[in-house]
Image (cartoon, rainbow, N blue to C red; front, side, top):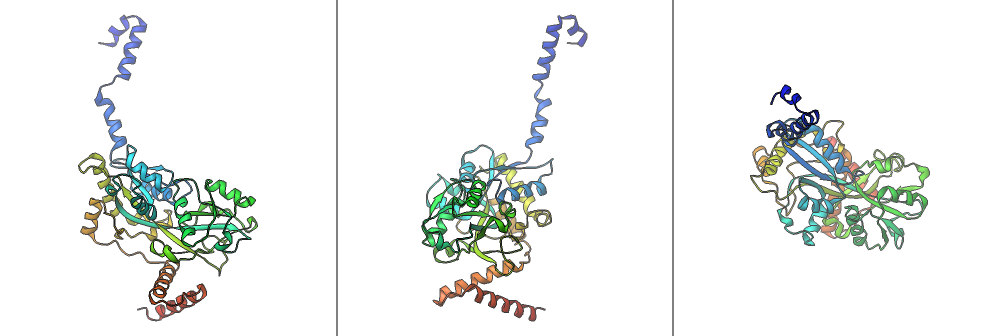
Length: 375
């Protein structure tokens, strides 16, 4: 039908035909747009906006999303337990960033059916357990019987926090406010402390000042905690207004991991994730550059997650290329490893656990010895 023949029809009929032509376009006119938008699409569900995993996923999108052959789409989730649930049931969610303690607990508790179909691509960073308390609280023991906030249900902090207190045999009254609201209640004195698992330095705490009358508490690495967590430390470099220069705060580190839904091999989503892995591993050095999150410096792509299977294409890449180049440890990371070695050595030998001051002295001696014997 020509334009002139259309114009010979009544005007309303002509517009109706034009409208029909616009909305009912041939498939070939629409498909390229849809196909381009979904080409290589991988969706990653993360923790809440106040957590570290959001930043890590944004970095992946920034470094790997080329806008033509692949797209990395971060999706803000509601904590590690919910991320695992979403990974199992939500359409389109391919990957998730979850805490390793939550992943192990989900399996032990049979929380989700077929949890063993979940595989991992790589261990990521450790997030630190931040225990922020009022100034009148001097130690974890002082929190006995008091209100301590661990975050909303399904938030990984709501799992890790109570688990740590149970291991240390300190009974508290747990609350479940969102972390921003909890911080306000801590300032007002309505609660005594709040526990948050987040990578340092956490934006939530960076605006706090000395006149807020709050401080971080030491979290001892002892008891059953040593089976799951690693030593970590908060320093004045991380929080200059909350931690004194020569008085770092010892705490625990919680591992995170990038996991994959149980996608059918050969499916388009499986191929998209396989392509993502190839590019992620190959272009990993980009993530070590500024302004990407400093937590990428902790990541070793070849590190294994005990008792879990690695995603097939990721395992193949590791076998073809070997371990990723070693990243030089900074002084804080080396100190954490050295402290863990001392604790495990004392536990194995049945000796007395060293004080923080003794550990610092030994570490300083080790550093001096290392510099004298460096080649």
